[in-house]
Length: 111
Image 1 (cartoon, rainbow, N blue to C red):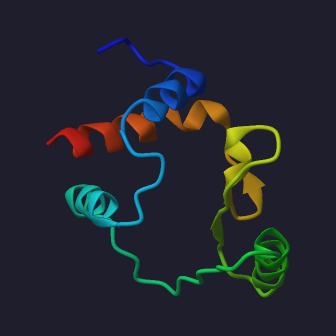
Image 2: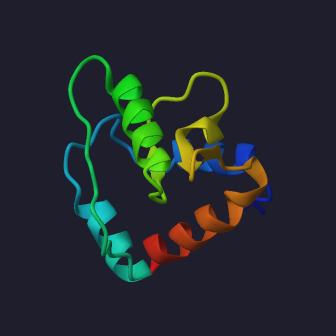
């Protein structure tokens, strides 16, 4: 496998991983989450629908931050840069912080 050192390399790699454009199942995600030991012991709000998801998430995030909660938001798609999809405590994550996380997911995916 090619050495993947930055976010652009990882995104290009991820685009080639799955043969289907859309796979409605969650089994692959569930398997990786289990292998990584991911579990939430906090409330999770899922926002779905056709319109207004980004605005709804932004409003919920602002309300919860003001109330003193620690928030994490993932939205898709992004407007300009991939890292806009991920916010922790109201701040967009840095592109440099994502490659080690992609690497951990890839290791779990290949187990």
